[in-house]
Image (tube, rainbow, N blue to C red; front, top):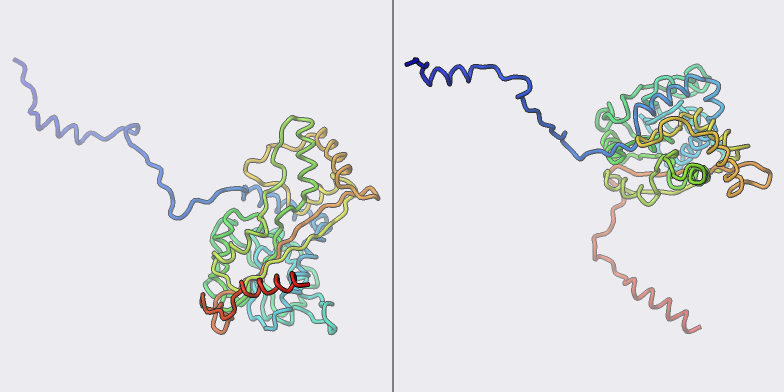
Length: 356
């Protein structure tokens, strides 16, 4: 009879046998925190902005929208009767806020230069080419103190310490953020107590003329609709986002800026030169066909065109101001502490109206 090795020896050799690569099991583990919906391709947007800024003169020609909004934001800064020691311009683009701070305001009887209200300005943006595009222009020397800081990619945390700034300004950059609630919470963290966050972002029905024209032209020529314009936040959502981030004393308003273009091709060329081309993750790869573009030109002109033949494009800008919590701020009264019943006031008005 053949002798077999002891059972203990067989088990020992089996345990010592190294596992094969195919036998190793791998598991996917979700990172901590709530999952973020990726609406925009951040890398694509970064490349678009870098490419646009590399054409220095071309990108300067299309700064009209950013410069106008920057001036209006600086006017809101002047409405706050306070001197700010450290101000952060978050998403500075080509430092349009810094330039606007050196322009005297014409809203008051005595012109005031907004830069006199601050000590140091930090312009921060993830696009180094765009951020340093105008570093040699004269407005830089007109500021009390100005530094430029290149930010990490937009989906990374802000590299600033808590309570670092007495004010944060952001002009036309928040509409490309995937996780806007998280960014607003970070802005609240880096602000000192009782400090303002003043921002402007594109939202609502911005470029609705272009949006509807492209949709109708594709529906007619291709039998379907693709995504060529980015989804934008609505003004009704902004207040809730600011409140969730911890801001107090909110102010939100909307302003429409209408720019006339000779044709739809000029509009899309300017958007590309601004670095504002479509960057939606689910966008159609490749350019829009010539047939669709020609059809959209006719539809645009028919539905929205001006009498002089130009095409209007509406940029809806949402302005917001929120304050971090601090001592001495106005506080809402305790619930139920009111001494006047609103129902009685309304009934009194109705009675007065019915007796006339």
